[in-house]
Structures are given as C-alpha cells and as structure tokens.
Image (cartoon, rainbow, N blue to C red; front, side, top):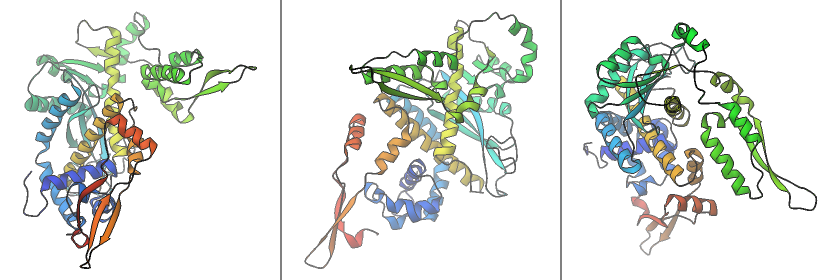
Length: 435
C-alpha cells in the first residue's frame, strides 16, 4: 500500500482497522473515539491517538480494497509456512449478510434468501473458500438475490486464475449441486464430493430401501453409550483426557452434552470418580436436525465410505467460519451503503477471521483448546500504567509500563511461547503524546 501524504502510512492504518475488527469489532467512529484510546497501540505502532480519526480510517478502506487479491495470495503462502496447509481439497459455501437501511448506493444490495432471517432487509451474498483446517483462502461478494449454485463456476475460475489449475477436490453443500455444475467440474478434470438436494432424493428411493450400505457414523447414540461406559479411574486428569479424546472423535455431537466429573465416596476408602452428563436444552433442536442421513455424490474412485463421509462433514468448517464472522467479528449487519466501503468492510472481516483461525490453530497445537474468545478476554485484562516523572524545567516525562501478569496469564503466555515486555516504547515528554 502507498505511504500516502500524511505521517501515518496507509498500511499501518489498515492494520489498525483489522486489529479493531479482531479485538472489539465496531464502527470506525467507535475505533477513533473510544477503542484506540483505550489500547496501547499508540506505543506499539507509533501512531498517536490524534492521527486516528474516522476520515483516515474510511480512506484506508479505499486503499486496502485494491490489494484484495495480493492479500489472499500472501495468506495462502503464510498458511503453508506456518501450518503446512494443503490445498488439494477445498471447502466452498455461501452465506448472506444484511444491511441496515436501504443501501441505495450499492447495486449488489438486493433482497433474497436470508440466512439471517431478515427477509425485510437488503443483503449481499458471500462465497467463502476454506482449507480442510478451516483457514480462509479466498472469498467473493455476490448480489443479494444470487442463487448459491450459480456462483460455483465463477469461484472455480477465479481460483484457477489466482493459483493455477490443479486437480483439486471440491467439497460442496447440496445447495451448489446441479447437473450443469457437476458437468463443469468433470469437463475440467475436477473432483468433487457433494450432497444431494432433497428435491432429487425421490429418484434414489429404491436404492435407499434396499439397505445395501455401510454405516460409518453412529452420531449421538454412540457418544451417549460411550459416556455411559466412561472408565472410572482414580486420577482426574486421566478421566478428563479420556473424555477429551471421546469428544474430539465426535465433535459434531460434543456441544449437545454438559459433562461433569464428580467424586463419589465409598465407605472409608478414597472413593472413585464418576462421569455424569446431561443434554443441553438449547441444543435439542440442533440434534433433531442433525440426526439423519445424507446421500453423497462423488467422482472420486478408491475412497472408502468413511473417508468420503468424514471429508464431506468438514463443510462444518465453512459453516463455523460464517458463524464466527457474524457473531464474534460483527460482520452483520452492514451499516455502510457505498459498494466499495461494503467490500472493504467484508475484507477487514476476512482478515480478522484469518487472524482468528491462526490463533485457534496456534492454541490447539499448544494444548489450549480451540476457543480464541476466552483467551482474548483473559489477555484483555493485561493493562498498562503510565509513570509520569516531573523534571527540573517543569516538563513531565511519561513512561508506559506493563505490570506483572497474574498466574493464569503467565501460564497461557508460557504455553504460547510469548513474553510480555515490562515497558512499551521509549520515554517521552507528556506534551508529545498526542502529536
């Protein structure tokens, strides 16, 4: 990005926008008037508070959008370096996000099928490509009334233009399926695993009634049985590791259960540990919708039914990406009305989600689970103090110091291999802090 005519380069302002979307997503006005002033970014990035204003943030949007393709290519390279990410298999799905207001200045804003249950609002559709680990590779924004299946060919051709043709496996939701799309993939030697639309299941009725298939996933019932049979070991950490492995192998059903390990007394002995569980009421609807059968179609030869099913179910990575962007990163609703500003808003959300997933994988490899939000909230408690020292000439020197972290923070930092400095920036005259 160009340095610009001001004292703060545009790429630094774009970094502030992306960090704000990751840490505390809100409007550009909130970033300038509230959020940035509460952070230590003026020391960490060398940008005084007075230089962060809504006008400069909006203009940074305009400069950032020009580099969307280069950013996607850069992220792909970084994923390979950091996580050895593979791109032989890609997951593609589409969602929508709605506008507050009429969005008259955006020709893409149209009424269509709303995943947000807001048919009263105009929207745009977003097609997102992620790796099997859920790392976001690329995205495109479509008109709000665009049907999912009409976006696939455009997405594949765009990926080939950016990253070249390759014999990739595309995993697609049943909403993408049409004879035209499948023929398009076959014509370019593409491979696919797709779900079958409900409307066409009738034609396979006889094959399903023959019951000539292999069961590869028992779902909730299997998890219930294994929880009932969970071994009672005296060591709590052994029991918890056993439950962790069980939930990891049944990740789709894991959220349905509230599991506790309790100690049961037995006479004068030390007693034993018992696993108890209950189903969460708020997940019951999810369970009813999730239980059932899928009919998959593929042109992959030599894959076992279990491998096909496990690969297809990784589409949940794409669904999780949309949930995170909407709930954690406030992708919805969109308040911008100009088309370019909407595109830039979505790009910042895409960058924030890339940071989110990288932190998630980092945490997972350090044995800290895969939920970034609790970690972010824990680190948000780390504050800085300004030590102000008077001088003989009447001026004051400001030194920004970081107090000692507490025990839980030190453990988290240690697992991540991070060290917090005791001081930020260089001492400076208090009168210079806002310049």
